[in-house]
Every structure is written in C-alpha cells, then in structure tokens.
Image (cartoon, rainbow, N blue to C red; front, side):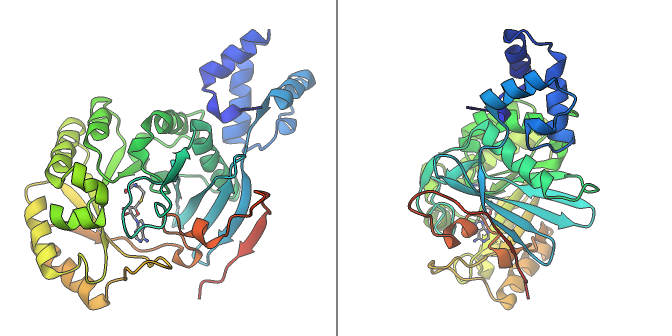
Length: 358
Ligand code: SAH
C-alpha cells in the first residue's frame, strides 16, 4: 500500500492517467482531503465507485495510529502518532484567539543532541516522509471544529527540519497551495539548530518562510556544552548564514534562547548576547526551560528570568518571552513520547485523554 500523501498533485494525475482515468479526478480527491477533511475514500461520494475501490486497493490516506490524544484546558491538543514501523512522533495544535498554530515533527528522534531536550535523548531513528509530515497537518486539521481553520505552522516538533529539507519542502509547498491548506510561507516558521549550508539553501530558494535559529548561548564555549553539534559549526558561521538569509529575503530572523537555570541565565550571558546581536535586525525569543524528567536542567527562577530580560530590553534588543502553551500535557518537544512506554508488540491503543491542567 502506498501513502497517498506522498504523491504530489502531478504524481496523482500521472497515476490516474496510467489507469486510464481523467486527470481532473486528482483535484477532486485533493479537495476531499484538504478542504473537506476526509479520512477515507468511501466519503468521496462524487467519485465513481470503481475509482474509489481502486484507490482503496492501492492507497492509504492516513498510515498512523493515534496512541494518545491529550487536551489541555488552554485548548492545546497534542497527538502521539505511531507509524506502521512502530516509530512514534508528536504534533500539537495550539489555539490563541483566532490563531490556530500547528507544531509538527520532521524526524523520529533527533541527532543534534541538545543536552536539555527530550527528543534527542535516544538519537535519531529516521527521517519522516513528506506524506508523514503532511499527515500530521491533516490530522490536526481534523480535530478542529468545522468553524476553525489552521492559520500558522511552526516546524518545531521532534527532529531537525534542516536535516530533512528534501521531504519537508514538498510538504510545506502543499500546505501553502490554495487547494492545499492555504497556509502561505509568511505563516510558516522553520526552527533550526543552525546548519549554515542548509540555511544557505533556503536563502538561495528565495522562500518566504520565517526562520528561527536556536542559539541558547552567547559564546561557543557554552554553546558547545548545551548544543554539542556546535563544535563542528560555531556561532560566527551561523550568524553569517543568518545575515545572508536576512539580506536576501528581508525577513527578520528570530533567535531562540532556552533559558536554563544557573547555566545560561546569568547577567554576563545577557550582556554578551547584546553584543552578539548588536546591529542585527532580529527578534530574540526567550523560552523558560520546560523541565524534562530524568534530566538535571532547571527552569530559571522568576528573578533570574526578569534580570536576564531586563538587561536585553534596556540595551534595545527586541526580546519577547514565549509563553508556554500546554505544558501540562508535555507539549515541549519530545516529552509526550517519553511519557508513554513503547509496547513490545507495537500494537497501539487509542486513548482519548482529556486532561485537567490545574
Ligand atoms: N531542531 C530544531 C527544532 C526543534 S526544537 C531546533 O533546534 O530549533 C524547537 C525549539 O524548542 C528549540 O528552540 C528547542 O531548543 C526548544 N526546546 C526543546 N526542548 C525544550 C524544553 N524542554 N523546554 C523549552 N524549550 C525546549
């Protein structure tokens, strides 16, 4: 069985042509999936029955099993999905006013090894396919009420998106199409640990995606400790690639800084960060660490957070604190997956679990 979502519109048309069927059926199928939120070919009542039967015999629309579905009081919903090979990933729907933001994963696990992050504790198992990336978007689309519409995508789930660009880009392209989810590049943020060659690739493609770079430290010595891949990259190379991205597409960059108690939250770190960002048109997103069970890192005290932010704001850095959504449902990167032990026989049960958050 093939994953239908792995096929582009052109490939679906080719399949139809190869089967002696008219190309316009492809648009009809897309409309059912993206606009009418269909989950099965049986629902596609304006397709001839024999075509529906051929599709059922050849393709699956969704290939995952939902292992857990958690709902927080603030409206955040999180899905833990299991693919046919037993691998699991997470994705999240965040509700803020009229905004409906989805946070999606690009890899099973992560190879970057950031010491505080739950996703990379066991390394990376594999890349997700284009279909698997799109499937997360469509499943999250379906859990909304019919009045709700997805408005934004953040590629901030499990994995390093720039290490799987070849599969991510077609998925984002489909998401952006008017006959897809209609979420344009300006409403899509790709978060990266900072891989300069892949950043340059995005720059050269002249995409209008928003780029967020996870910095987490103001100097290489500290960043090498927190983000081990930095030893082979180094901050100056990342900032130069970030500058080239800004120069070429004019989009302001975001730097993310996970604030870790007594590790990167001292006044001298804030002052060093001011120097690093001086002269750059950038937004600094400070994220107080969401503690991960079993790891020794701490959420910084309120006093330390305030002190850190004040130094930056007073120096004129455009800084904001990212409020945590759904933290009671383990919404930070890779945490839900760890809180569910993997069954040995890979048979997954569906558990719908509304969760009180206070
Ligand atoms: N690999 C990419 C995208 C995934 S992580 C990247 O590094 O940017 C998305 C963001 O969440 C990163 O800034 C990451 O450092 C942050 N993050 C991961 N675990 C976290 C935690 N427990 N608390 C707060 N932020 C976390």
